[in-house]
Image (tube, rainbow, N blue to C red; front, side, top):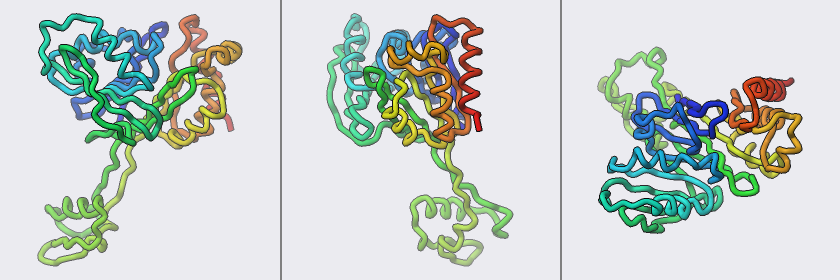
Length: 314
């Protein structure tokens, strides 16, 4: 099951590490200051997901690539419009005469819209951008696929939903057959929707469709990260489409309810608004994150109380 760890302390800028159990790969959501993020964790990050490039979400990008240079790996960076230009500017601001072109490769995926993703390649030592493709999906690897929603924060702010791959399990008690390689063959036929595939079990040949009742599809865990966004219906409609019935969502809750006027002025959310949209999305669990640095620990508790009151109200 996908796991998430907030790597920032209360008054630090936000950064969330997404972990896949039994995998060496991690994903990082936003690059704010993060005292709890270790060098080892940074070096295991295979993809970064940037919501937007306000300084509190992007200031630590230099620290991230400082510990990735020399890995020889391809690292994916996803982010809003112009993310490729901003990454290029950060990389070109340093001198790289001691780093060769095989030290690392970044693949930058610019979210023009939910259905239009520009893909760029950039490598040392000159860091010249190369547009390599335009595609209609954001990210997928052997562990997860990632959907997104482009929200309004007086700039594009990309919210991400990580979907663990579905799994198929075999019900041994219901079959009466001995285990064998036929189980993997049956699962493959189930996944590829090949009902006519011949499956031989103990000398007898069956159609795969006659054995599909022995399998159960288990929907993968869905974990969302929604960063800065204005409280408005257009944002909420997008959130409902992508995050409905998610298992767990971390959502920006920058202000207390009493400061909702500030929230409106700064295109942020506030406690009860974030809690209510999570309730409206019927998510199983929600966690408020990313509080204004003006707030103390007591203020944070007040925000959480208002958030969960709205989220859990009948």
